[in-house]
Structures are given as structure tokens and as C-alpha cells.
Image (cartoon, rainbow over all chains, first blue to last red; front, side, top):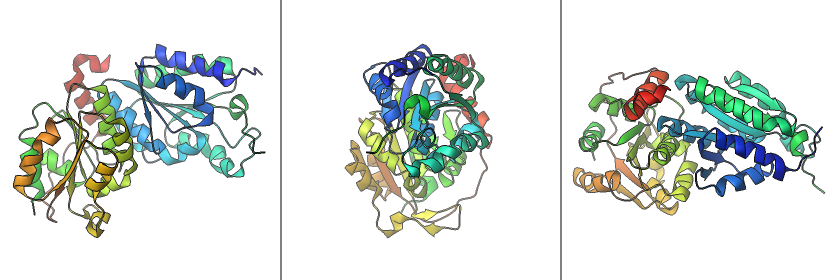
Length: 174
Length: 192
């Protein structure tokens, strides 16, 4: 088990998004994506859009693809539930979709309110037609984002990468 | 009070090369019946998505005007997107709300706009560059520069009478609608 800090592993994701020519980054603020969000905002070649709710991001990157641009949606597991009906847009139109989801409600969670959605995130995505790939080790993040982007944008499929809470670290309330 | 088909026809006559996204229900039926085009992206579902699809498209195509034509109920379901668009301030995005104050597909139940909710007021408060409500042909005509050429984001609420014009069923298959749009906009590169 690697124990790299977020400042290090967020760079792996960022670099893979750059290599995949991602032009729009949509997010709802999330502690697990804090460093990545800051990197994307600092990059003038990425239009980084803060959302009021996650399903806005599914629609945003669909619009980006209509215009010939690739996008990614960053969220935590609680946001996946907000996206369910919007995923019908992706399925019906065969839009590509790349979601990067930091997991809550699993390894060492101390907020019981996160457990319900965290425990159903993978299943909800799967029954909504999204291909789910879990990442447990930080050194797998770069290859997983690269492979997910390739499958999304070349094979026109929705792909969600779930970053395990063990990798992100459990938030403490003390 | 305007007739919805007359209002949409008046808008589409001067669209030139604008890219159009239509919200589910009557706005999709209106636009498809009046002037079908490969550069129309028709929604039959995903209620609440039209404005955000417009934002993603506008950011991807900054040299083209993007016009979202949707209904009051559809926009109310994605009301937060007005805040997101207000924060991003895309200068090439306009949203036209064909507002009959009703949910037309589900039995003409009244929407919040029938009870005093002011969508142009919401857009203005969210930071839109312009936000107006029109209810006559003259006022609609005067709003065309805001829709097509002035610096956006713009929102125009078009108050229309309650009616259901004859339905001419437009394209239904979402993948085809998407691919037709991308090919018309991006050329053969759309499928590389």
C-alpha cells in the first residue's frame, strides 16, 4: 500500500488529463479532489467550471463533445446519486463520459451520513450503464485515467473511475 | 400574448449559423416543426439539462453563437445552471424560455412562473449580461440582438399563450441527433 500524499497523486491524474487533451473540467468541490481542482484552475488550457450540482457536469461535458471538445467531471461518491437521470442523456445519445469519483462511506468513514451513497455508488453507476473501474493504489491513477479516457472518447462509452477512500484517506471529525 | 410557433418562427428566421439546443417537450416540437437543421440538438429527455449542454457547447465553440430554446418547466428543473452560467459568463450563449407557465407534456399543470417566479429576475441576479421578459411581437423583435449578437450570457423569457400546436414528430434517436449535429459542425473529423 503506497502512502503518497494528495499533492503527489493528484499530479498523476492531472498529467493523464493533459495527455488526453481534456479541455473542460467540471466539478463540485470535494476535499479528495482539492489539489487536482487547484491544478486545473491554474491551467489556462483547461476551462474549469464549478457546478451547483453534479448532474450539471454530465450535461456540460455532453455539450462540450457536441462542440468537439473533451471534458471530465470530478465529484465525490455522494454526487453520483444526483446524476442518475442525466445519465440517460449519455446512454441514449452514446456520448462519451469520463467521471473521476473520490469515494466516501467506505474505508474508515467517520461520517455515517456518507455510508449510504458510498456503499451504493458502484452499483448505481453500473445499472445506469456506466463502466466502473476502481483504483486502489496511487501509482495506478495515471494509467487508469489514460485508459478510461481512451475508452470514453474513442469507444464512445461512459467510464467512471472510483478512487478508493483508503487511497484518498478518511476525513476525521475530532 | 404571443403564439409559441409564431415566436419561435420569428427567432429562427434570423438564426444564420447559430447552434441551437432545444429543451424537451414543446420547444423541441416547435423548432423541429418550423425549421429542422442538423445544427439543432433536440432533447426528448434529460429534463433540466438544456442550459448546461448549451454552456458546454458555447465554451467549446467560442466563435459561434449558441442559443438554447427551452420551456419554463425544463429550466426550473435546472435552475442552479443559471447560477453556473452567471458565474462563467460565456459571451456567446443565450437562453430563450418559451414560457406558457405550464407543464405541457403532463397535462398543462401550472408551473412556478404562473405563481410569480420571475426567471429573468433570477438570471439577472445570477449575473447574466442581459435578462428580459417579452410578451409582444415588437418586444421579441427588439430582443433579437440580445439573443444573437450582443455580449452574453443573455436570457429572454418569451411569454406565450397556452396552446398545443399540431405535433410533427421530429427525429427521435438520440445517437443520430448527436452524430448529425457533430458531423454538420465538425465535418469528417467528427468521427475520427
